[in-house]
Amino acid sequence: QVQLVESGGGLVQPGGSLRLSCSASGMMFSGYAMGWYRQTPEKQRELVAIITTSGNTDYADSVKGRFAISRDNAKNTVYLQMNSLRPEDTAVYYCRGSSTLLGNYWGQGTQVTVSS
Image 1 (tube, helix red, strand yellow):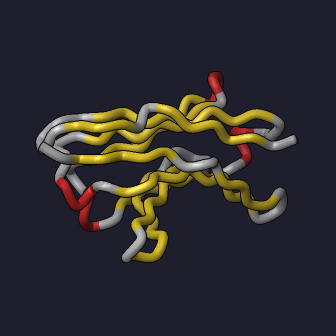
Image 2: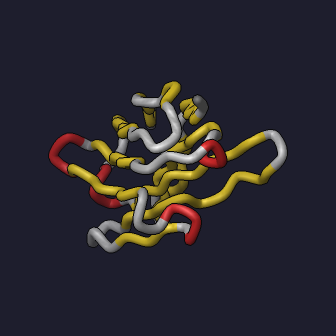
C-alpha cells in the first residue's frame, strides 16, 4: 500500500545541480519524518539529510551548504536540492519515511552520477 516513488536522478557535470523528488502514497505523509540516504558499492548507506514532521532539518557534514531538503505536505512530496555537485556525490539516493508509531518505508532509489 505504501509507496515512495523517486525521480530527478541522472548524469550531471561537476558543479552542476539536480533536484530529487520523492512522492509518497498510501501513508499519512505529514506524520513521517523524511530523509534522503545514499549508497555506493564501497560505502554503507549513509544519511544525507532529514526533515522532521515539524520542518526541522539536519545534514551530513559532507553536504552542508550544498544540499537542501524540503517537504510539501500538500503534495505528499519531499525534495533534495543538490548544488555544487562533486564526483564523490555519485551514489544511489534513497528516500525514507520514518515514524515511531507507523513504521519505516524506503523508496526504490535513483542513480545520481556526477562526472565530466
